[in-house]
Image (cartoon, rainbow, N blue to C red; front, side, top):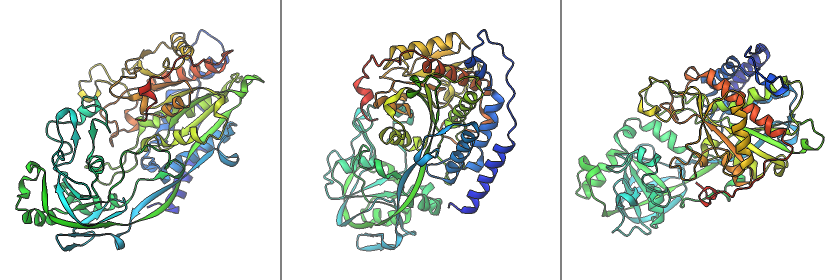
Amino acid sequence: MRTNLLRKNILSLALIFAILLPGFAVAQTATKANSAARKSAQTITAQQLKEYLYFVASDAMGGRDTPSDGLDITAEFIALMLKRWGFKPAGDNGTFMQTMAMTSNQVDPSKTALEIGGSKMKFGYHFFAQPTAGAVSNAQMVFAGNGWLIKKKDIDPLKDLDVKGKIVVIHSETDFPEGVTMKDFQEGKLGQFGVDILSPPMYAASKGAAGIIVIANEDVDRRWDLHKAAAGKGRATVDKLVNENRRRGRNLPTVTISREAAEKLFASEEKPMSELAKIQPFAMKSTASLNVATNPVVLKTQNVVAVWEGSDPVLKNEMVAIGAHYDHVGTNPLAKGDDKIWNGADDDGSGTVAVLAIAEALKNASKRPKRSILLVWHAGEEKGLLGSEYFNKFPTVDIKNVVAQLNIDMIGRSRKTDDQDPRNKELSGENTIYVIGSEMMSSKLGEVTKATNDAFLKLEYDYRYDDPKDPNRFFFRSDHFNYALNGIPIVFWFDGVHEDYHQAGDHPDKIDYEKMEKVTRTIYLTMWEIADLKVKPAVDKQLPKELTERR
């Protein structure tokens, strides 16, 4: 629960941190060039990045969920630093914040009901509900196994069953059907999600089902109260984007029943619950009625937006955008083990503080780049790129004047030469970073990106994911995507997935700060080179069709 006391305590910590933060010593690394850009790049240091990140990815921020107190405090901290450094607010009403109104539907227990085979179930004891409102009365039930449709594996549990207007019953004994793993999904072996693959709710909806009953697995049954509380809180949606966001099938009223309730149900169907995962789909004799009622809860979150005005009287009207998402996935009370906070140090605390360090370097420079620099910290990336979509559709600046967008999402981890963990096999090395999208839209942008690195710190740029057919679909999975859809050429720096990707172990003590320093300095100089080009990078390539379709 969000409390004013918590907010005041964390805000106080942020203010103290900002006020007492010592000046960062300029690194002594020599550079061949003596330009203002290169000199100011040296003020970006590993120690500076570390101190910022230990704050942003601390437990006090609670994993920076969208929306949350931790995310709000992080935004306030960023805005405070920007104000101290003399940046121009570019959010709403002369502030650094672009506010996004959000709504979350939450289950109303007093009006939510379930009846199976004529027996009324007790909310909170026999069942709980997902916050997808709807009702169905006296409908036949159909058992659909674990409910997945996976065409390439010939898995189609409802193939021979009529479910239109009926309630689909599924079990959650296994995450995926037998012979299917998460790796199959990640590597694209099963085809396109939403076409070749349909999740149980999507599949049931596509077949015309009227509702869903999920049978709790043993873990849910054992930690019933925690799962009930988590299920009752709906995912927050940004109000202005609701009508525009892609639809993946209508939401069906969905309830989860306890194993005790399921035992009685399957006994009446003369099926053994002990072999639930092996029971083949069938039309059930029992009928059910369910009604899920919800109440809307109004929330808010924000992007943080600032401008550093350029020095050229004409070119300063154009902008080079640089950004990162400062949110992560929050706190998970259902997590196994003692660590319940997903700190998101690499994802994307590393990008968050890199952009902050770049802002400070601009302040430290003896002159300004010719074009203006637009800095945007996006909220809601983990909820479906919400902040960047919102900013591109409802910009607080003239977005047509943005000549390129540089996106930083995960630049803090590296694979050591003796690391044999298979989860880290695609993690980039200590002097390597993946670069995505630099040549997909603009030859000039790709040229500048490569040349800047070659002339400076000579990182190893790995372009393996710079491909529309990349099965990981990384081009679709971070905020640059919405800028590209808007016709703005982009570059995306990324260190690769690793053992702590979207896990509780993504802590700041596991970051390679020396690598972060090199990558951040290189991005800073790339930004400056683009800002000083006589002519903006031309969009001379058309994005492939597969890149312009929603993920």
